[in-house]
Length: 342
Ligand code: KG4
Ligand code: ZN
Image 1 (tube, rainbow, N blue to C red):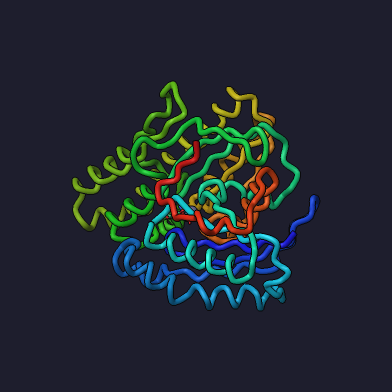
Image 2: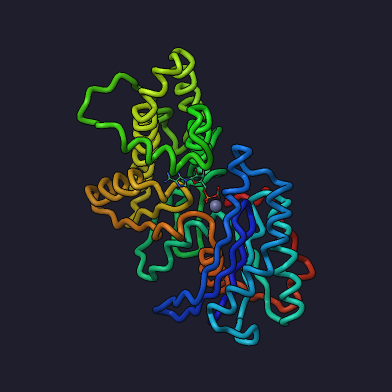
């Protein structure tokens, strides 16, 4: 079964073709056109600019995707597109393009939830033992999901304020380090020699709360208070230590709650997903703790952690197994910016 995935929920325009069999998934192409360099200037994604860039890029990305995969549209069995959550101005470009292709090529069209797709990036490995606990950490969401199988899930916890990636981005911004903050903060943290005594400590918000929710807004504010008390020379000197301690605090809370959930729900596997899953410290810490507790651990390769259309195609494959997708589905199709996993 060949699936075309399309993703335009934020600032990446992406298209991917994957050939699925029961046992194997062959990624024929996964083209990602990132707008990061354009939005950098503004310190974050500007929706209006993102939409214009998607309009400019979508056909180029789609034709590069077909060309690299050496696939004619007739061979495609299903089109899967991100319908939400995300920026409405961005989502609508992918959704309307997918509807046009569905009509023109006479191919069924399936709506994919972007957060489900992030965790489905782990299904590139078809051997997963369930139940599983998935930690999805991105720029807009931080969620713990209990999975009974590939497509049956329940949200058991989420952030009550900022998302983990958002906190990385805000901390980078207040330290004047640029956008997106996650990769910059984690690189800066490497410059701190952790064998030295630390002069900065930050809270681990909600680490002992009796639920599976998170809070990152207070952690970011704690960084802000520390920085406000320092002279600019001191900030410069301590930037790597602040980044190190901030990353330690975020990783500790995320890891602690994920393992606690895995134990409580007797999970066999822990899955990590979303843009922040590209963080090396989080990957290694969660893997170590999962293994210490006898749990399997899976995380996608780096390129499938941040936004990409391969994860949309994979999600489409598992969703289509339980659903008859009609050919005229495009008629009732709409972008849904607030679409939350239940
Ligand atoms: O999943 P994603 O690509 O887009 C959304 O759906 O939001 O995630 C983007 C987020 C950004 O906040 C970015 O700073 C964060 O992922 N991120 C990281 C790293 N790479 C990307 N956060 C921490 N460490 C990283 N290495
Ligand atoms: Zn994402």
